[in-house]
Amino acid sequence: MVKERARILVVGGGYVGMYTALRLQRKLKAELRRGEVDITVVTPDPYMTYQPFLPEAAAGSISPRHVVVPLRRVLDRCHVVVGEVTSIDHAVRTAAVSTLATAEEGGASELFGYDELVLAPGSVSRTLPIPGLAEYGIGFKTVEEAIGLRNHVIEQMDIASSTRDPAIRDAALTFVFVGGGYAGVEALGELEDMARYAARYYHNLRPEDMKWILVEASDRILPEVGAEMGRYTVTELRRRNIQVLLDTRLESCADRVAVLSDGQRFPTRTLVWTAGVKPHPLLAATDLPRTDRGRLRCTERLTIDGTEHAWAAGDAAAVPDVTAAEPGTETAPNAQHAVRQAKVLGDNIVRSLHGEPLRTYAHEYVGSVASLGLHKGVAQVYGRKLKGYPAWFMHRVYHLSRVPTFNRKARVLAEWTLAGLFKREIVSLGSLEHPRAEFELAAGGKPSQGTSDDPKGSS
Image 1 (cartoon, one colour):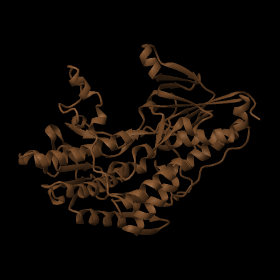
Image 2 (spheres, rainbow, N blue to C red):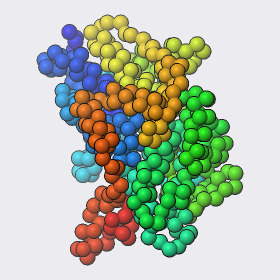
Image 3 (cartoon, rainbow, N blue to C red):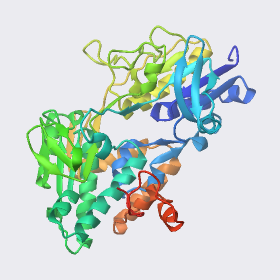
Image 4 (cartoon, helix red, strand yellow):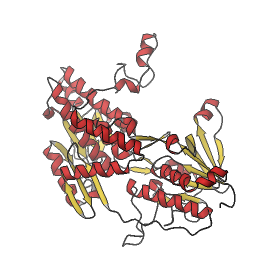
């Protein structure tokens, strides 16, 4: 029995936020029914995005709706509030929340009181002060960015196919990706595969006309799969006429020209930035202890060090890795740890409410898998190295088993099955990004700020 009514506030609706709330509503079913516990989840989006499927969503292998999980359906015993937590004062147990309603009312942020706090806001893209990056860079962290990038790539092929200007054609068919981690390599591999397939439907485009470039500041890519598999990935990408530039940085992309540290210049209309992430800015607006890198300082029991009734996990938390041989090692900020941390975190909150001892989070990293396009991939799992079709198949099986809810598993599996029977979709729906532009022009108005002159265009 819970001694007093407990208000649990979960900040963030990603891996940790959703799985923690899901664990809590299962473990505290009786307490929720009696009104002894109240769980509130504050999230900017009413859904959780399964990010490992973003590259396949961008390539058209999976529908965007099936990459996300609606939180209100899954967390039916929790209060889901769509909004942003702007600051937290843990000393008085309050969080300032800005919602769509507060924005409409023009008032100040609403204060939410809590007894137990779960901080899981995740991370944001780590950018650098590079000229032109804010104006022309494209991120790859949300489902909206993934679908926007797909539309953009197909639109560039349309531009190249219809222009007679060789400079415009060359820039349209040059695609630069910055960052050799999972996001960059998988997005590049899937989109190049999709564009290569789409080129057969253009009378004046060949796959050899397109220029795909991967820029990585270190001397290796995909460090998670090991040095050997990283070298194999470089060889495989170069075999597909993809330029892999190691020990190279992006110096500028002003005026749609990518200037690299080795002196090379590439006129391009597509620059995708996937060069890492950083802790969410919300952490700086709290009175909770942080590490030198800005992450919350946590214990192995997933409590925030030096505080009571405050918990954290995932990208925002620096959790000690008790399985590591070297002391002081922290768990990697990836989905593999986040999902398992959420389970322990939820159980520990229940144990804390019931006055029971807390569990220690211990999970030895089992390995990684990465897709490089249809039927291509690399993997290192339990020390075993796989490449090509076996690695790609393992990638699909693993992530199909991990995507939340049976509903999403069934839909993704059905789409993969249909994709094997029918041809790929190569349609660009750029107008989805500015759906009112055409009507505004027809009504005699001007397009909304930020839209292109072409009401159908995405760039």
